[in-house]
Length: 175
Image (spheres, one colour):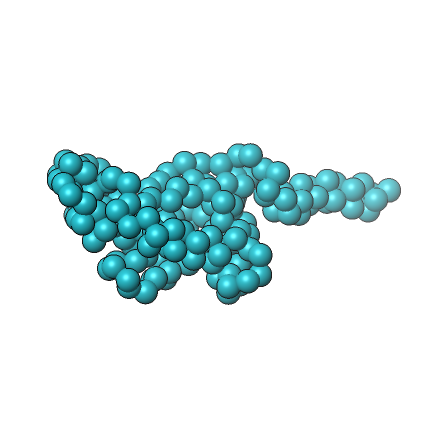
């Protein structure tokens, strides 16, 4: 009976650990604005979180397409998604429709410009804290809606988890 009690105790201790990582889609516990590095994703996983909403996050048009008609550079966002997948954390992202190269084509782009003190502009203080994502200094609706829509479609296709043109190795689609 001692061995029987030991096995039952062991199963009772192990079972919650084994099942906690299985269904993060049903896990409504998460964090807003957390750092997007391996240590933080490991922490979120260890405390039982299933979600993270990075803020501002990696889905900034200018960070992925740095010039008009340019190629998409998914490296930064891919890295975040891969880290989240590794730690079984679902991402709920905000899509930021801002690219300075697009905004400056408006009739009066200065009307869209934010103050130099805006906390989401790239700056030394943010870099020192490890934040490399930013939101550009012009924040109006896109000027070139067709180009913006192409970018959004490409991003959705890359991270939707449907098996077509997805990020290689994607295990958890981005929401």
